[in-house]
Image (tube, rainbow, N blue to C red; front, side):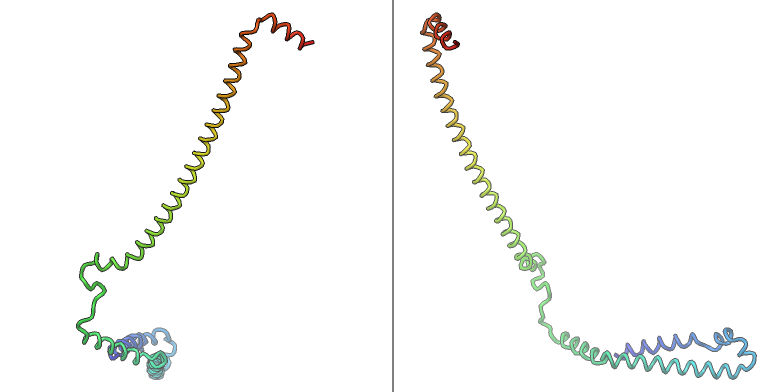
Length: 178
């Protein structure tokens, strides 16, 4: 905490130093020419008032935000952690691969479940398609058997037509056309 206060004090001094008399004398030449001692007194009062206001504001911020208490707690934590020699680091075994295994295991298990779900979906789709192909083959086989039976019937009819004399067929067809 003392380091913070020292830094803030040095910063305030540097900022206040920027408001030196020569800067005011250049800016307010008319006042400097008429009464330099009065201007110097005004500048001195201004600098003192500014310094007091800034220091009061810093103290107000420190007290409102409870900065000293926070620094005290931080110092306590640092002292306690220095006393604990056997604390485990985030990589207790020293082998990053081994230490990360427990962390990545959950991720890998989720990934495995997702892959198994996808595999099951693909297997179900394959089974469905196999059933569809089997049904289509059976239908095709049944249609081929029907066609084969009809072809046999047509071949028998053609053979029967071949055994009939042509004159007899033409007389029969004449009767049908009339």
